[in-house]
Length: 145
Image (cartoon, rainbow, N blue to C red; front, side):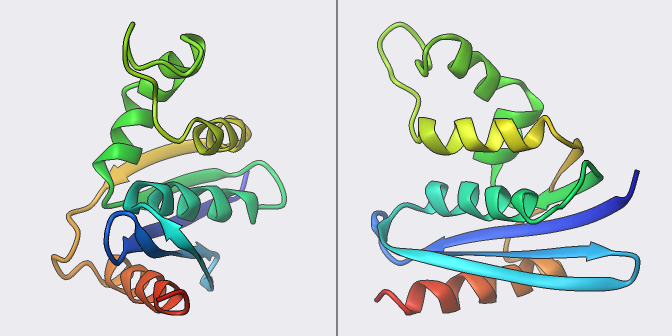
């Protein structure tokens, strides 16, 4: 199984507002950068979109180390929150619906195709790939500002 490192970040100018996401995929010494955005979105939607698009770019099941500065994404995957929300018909508890269910549904489908290790990194703390992903995300968001 191929091992791929994925670095992701999302950005939003206002929350909601114009947003963007960026991702770097690294395999065997090669890197690919991906980015995109939306005119009216949230930071969490862009964090999710970065991971979804990065995993969707993989052409076969892979061993993945995913680096993200989003505790929302990391904890929901690592601690099984997203799986529980799905099992509970996209409810966080008896009264609160889970946000972004359509994105979580896409992400969980892709996530289960691969063996994914989640690594949380502190944002805006000098992590080179996280800084690059942030620049990609901000540039993508600016196209919608």
